[in-house]
Image (cartoon, rainbow, N blue to C red; front, side, top):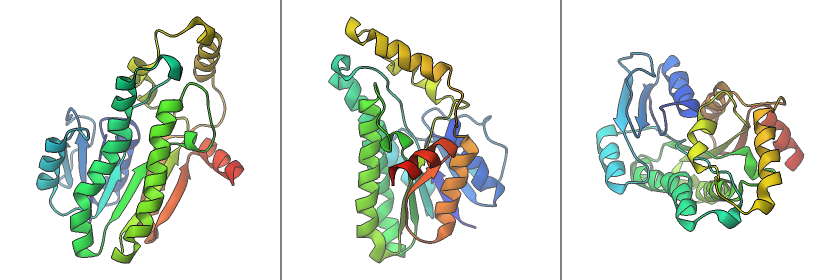
Amino acid sequence: MKTVLITGCSSGFGLETAKYFLERNWKVIATMRTPREDVLPKSEHLRILKLDVTDAESIRHAVKEAGQVDVLVNNAGVGMLGPFESTSMDAVREVFETNTFGTMSMTQAFLPQFRARRAGAIVNVASSVTLKALPLLPVYTASKAAVVAFTGSLALELQDFNIQVGVVLPGMAPETAFASNAHARVAQTFPQDYAATMDSVLSGFQNYDGLVTHSTDVAEAVWNVVQSGTTAFRVPAGADAVEWFDQSK
């Protein structure tokens, strides 16, 4: 029985991915900044660990507690929406600390055991906004674009060690709590010149009725990357993400 460790499992993509692997008889280590026992079904194959991917000591502790892991899924992430002009650099760093550096730190922490065994898989969850530029998302997009570029280069240097590497690109997922969790990072103060753009974008999100991504789409994409047995670089997840991916070719 193989083991997968997934970050950001309290809700959304991480939660659904944890359920998906549990249902397929994997051992699952579900990590959360604030552990909750009630969000996942009881199982002898489930462990819930406290983990903050922006904290080096927290990562060291989680790696020690996890032991041997076959698959690492870097899913933890935060959002941000607003004009770049009025975004503080502290806020920019906060987004990169979780989305980009958190992914890198977790990957670096597990690589020694993967390399020693000449086996393992790393799946990073980025975003389809890296396929199509959207206004008011420059910081979030940059943090996820960095993950995509990081994953592509990493895949090349790890291929001799039989380590799979892939990045999943989810689309817009209204059913998840991501938007509400990111509300604290929606710009509240900005130059009035940006008001029309802010109103238009926020209205577009609130009244969106096009193709969307479901959490199960992301869980299935992660599963398929792992099951493929080979590096699967850039895999869209969700009907909207697939459409954008096809248009970007």
